[in-house]
Image (cartoon, rainbow, N blue to C red; front, top):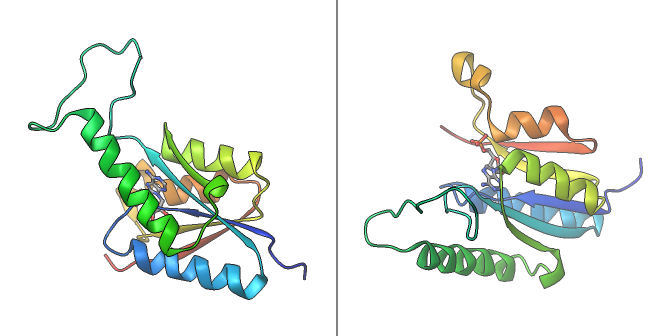
Length: 146
Ligand code: AMP
């Protein structure tokens, strides 16, 4: 079997995010693969759009939220020793952007966390399920405890 050469880790900073990140890091070391990380901002209003009023959460401005997101992302990237050019922080719909960057950067494995949803929650969809169904490369779902 050909080793994985480029692993893309999708991060959402959930409680068990570090656990998923550590697994991706171990896999990258095992396969001597390049490690990239992606976080998609879907809860901060995108600047310079026509969507009208920015929804502010309490007193925090979207700029401050963005700075917080950048700082978290930088901390994780530094922790995993990911090259700056392999860190993707962007706006959009997580499932779409994860798949898009994986294709653009020719990742051959995407690592996501998975809560193992059932029933209605599964039907409604999750990032992990969508990536699993639509990615053209392999996807590793790290089972998370609910
Ligand atoms: P979910 O299916 O939405 O519970 O998310 C499961 C996994 O999808 C997470 O553990 C991450 O690997 C990935 N994910 C979810 N949201 C995002 C996001 N905004 N940016 C990047 N990856 C995400």
